[in-house]
Amino acid sequence: MNIPGPRKAVAFVEGTMIGAGEHCVRAATELGLVPVFVTKEPEIYPFLDRCPCEVVEVTTADDGDILDALSCVSNERNLEIVGVGTTSDNMLLPVLAAAKTLGLEHPCPASIRNCKDKSATRRLLPDQSPAFRSVSSARDLDDCRGLFTGETIVKPTSLNSGLGVRRCRSWADTKRHVEHLWEVGLVPEGDGTQQVLVEEYVSGQEFSVEVFDGVALGVTQVEIDDSMGFIEVSHLHPAACDPELDSMLAASAEEAVRRTGLIWGPAHVQYRWNGTHARLIEINPRLGGGNVTQCVEHSRGVRLAHAYVKRICRLPGVGDELRVSNDKWAVVRFVLSRTSEPVSEVTGLEDAGRADCVVEVGTRARTGERYAVKGSNHDRLAFAIASANNAEDAIAAARVAVEHISIETQEG
Image 1 (cartoon, rainbow, N blue to C red):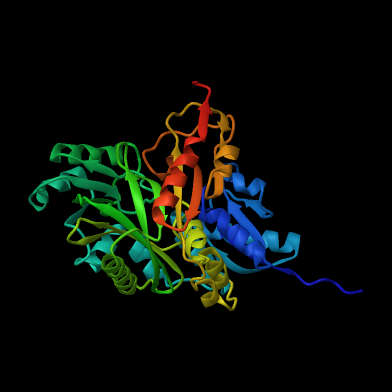
Image 2 (cartoon, helix red, strand yellow; image 1 turned 45 degrees about the horizontal axis):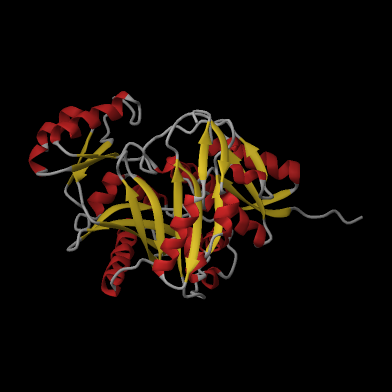
């Protein structure tokens, strides 16, 4: 009797709640792999209900927990784990440690640390960075007051998705928000490290550059809502900007990942253009969140999620996934959480999906769940993606589509 060998599987640990997390699971399935999703909270990922996937719930999601979980699922379900990855900033270091222990493909540890620590990124790229200072308490601000003449941005050095990021209109506001970050526990208290970054506010248009293996693949134009924090409410790929600006942003991003050592796999590099200079916001050593991967695929045919899965699993053909095979524009637009009251119903998804040029719609909102307004990208509850032969039509179509979608709550 022939005993079947183990099926090849790829594990993803946590991930984005909308966008790249689901996209990677789908890519793995299309590449003939068994996707395994390791998470502390399976209930926050609605795509797990509709995507074929082995779900493993863990307690802490540190590298030891990840290794134990993968060992169990391998033995119980006859799987050979050939790759481990994540689309979550918080899981980058634990996943890297687990992959290293298992002898699997992984990026350079120093490059991940250089990008996750925003202060380290600034020190490595002073010519691309705005004026900044890292502080370990509100008292440290007195020594750097002279660096800043206008508005500032205050952000934790190691968080992502806009959590804790605030635009401060005055120095008094700057001090208050720095103190607030410790009061609410967004940064650890009393460990002596420089945990908060204070930097000059850079006005202008925001862009991101999608990079893979150190090469810029395209520029994405970002729309920001900073009324309650920093929320990316829309992405347009490719950006509708001057070709010279496009080339300069791409070259700047390639230089940024080279200096930080991030020349393996994906990077999502964010800039603000003030009309004269491009200033680096941050480098995310992962696929772009917020459905950027889908926009790149729907516009240019470049399959970033497939390339990532192939890279972490040592599969051939990574370059094939990165070739441009289309000549369109794609836009994603989001519907945001506006209240922490329980969701009663999400309406209009079918109507949005039938709108002209719309190629994808979705939501992560579940009936009965509460979604606190955080002033960050975690507020994004639903989306529509439109693709067209020009940027203007794609933008207009996405706006029309999201007007159909409503997040109804018990508040009314």
